[in-house]
Picture 1 (tube, one colour):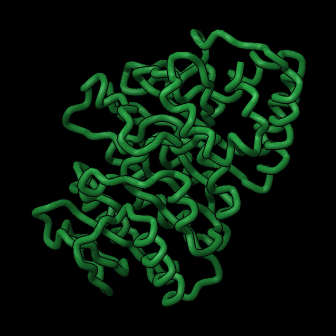
Picture 2 (cartoon, one colour):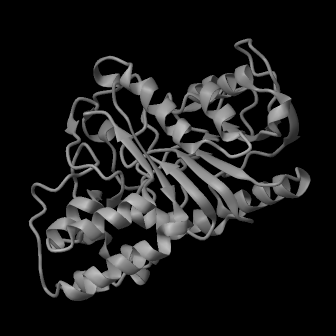
Length: 348
């Protein structure tokens, strides 16, 4: 939990939710927490979650750290490796909790709150900001010291095909949102028990998340979530490569393609909406491959009452054009660009 930013108070709320539902029979839940300046403590700590129903954090501090950049990949690797080494388990799951911006490099301006200013009392979770330092998505993936049964991103925009490509060899399942996640995040009093089942109920995690937000009112009725089964990732890559290899010089008008960002800056397009426009002949094949990769996705009708969700597969993809050339060279370093035969599109 990188909360050394404007999400600090929500970290406390979420840990309280974890404590309220915790049962030692589940296993072990270890939280790396880095809170904002002025918090007690403000330096990072490692918590072993225990059951408690008060509004205070009662979980046991098992390690303290000096003030450090919790977004530094080297630090992330060290922390996670120490946890895995010390707390033996049959399998491991990982939750990334902080800001996040899909595949885009740290410092970009993606995000509705920074462009519309609508929710000025409830920040969005858009990975990692620690004293204005962040982590590039490729570095974040490479910082992982082992394979995880699941990775859950409680952070904005991480359900992107570029993110999946980076993490595909590090997890069996990924849960993430293609849109913004409001700062209240997941309902951890429900999420944690579902994740600690002998066979984790990932669909329940997703439905509980969506039920929570669908029951809200107004601008706070805003959420989307996607479950990815990465055993189908290789076949999906093969399918997409075959499309990109055969469509030649076809260019498409992005004007009416579903985007996932309120400002619609031409970074995060719905992948199915793109594929069916690039290849109108094999729509059934797109559906087949996506349904295997995505066993569950759900969403509200709008995000922050500003972005309508109509053509939604739950997975975003970048489409290069003249409006977003500032990211083209950076994008060419990503695994998705190299693995999917997407390179041809940048030369059109």
